Length: 196
Image (cartoon, rainbow, N blue to C red; front, side, top):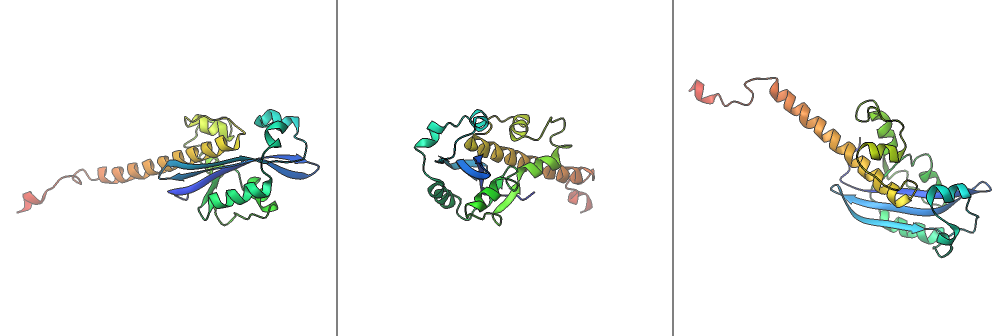
């Protein structure tokens, strides 16, 4: 897995109407050295009617979106927030990146880690016994909580899961290094005095 010390974790919420995808929330968190240092969060105005399913899933209402800025303005601010930092997401290659591309923003070259793919790879090792790979399930399994389908909370959970995976990888490397030292019973002893 790509080891990033500074990155943007992001998530989108959207509504489909008559075959068109309408953004309703765009969020991101900036992490540096395992700490959140900044956040971006904005609802997005849309004239498309909000499906009741989406309202129930996200808690976002038409009233919430009524005074929000339009997608172009939100995405320009998102672009400034992201800059040229690497991106981390949860299954974003299948939904979020294509939606951003539809709006003229191509982040495929900056997208470095899909945490969903990492979770899939670790399902039988680090995530043994997990019921499914939904973000909230993985986050809860690792000891984190957040409101699912709120893009700011999802961006934070994605970053925290990524940080947990980084920590697990570093621990494995440390253990491997210690086991190689332990394979030589005299490895930690200074025996130079014996041979003078």
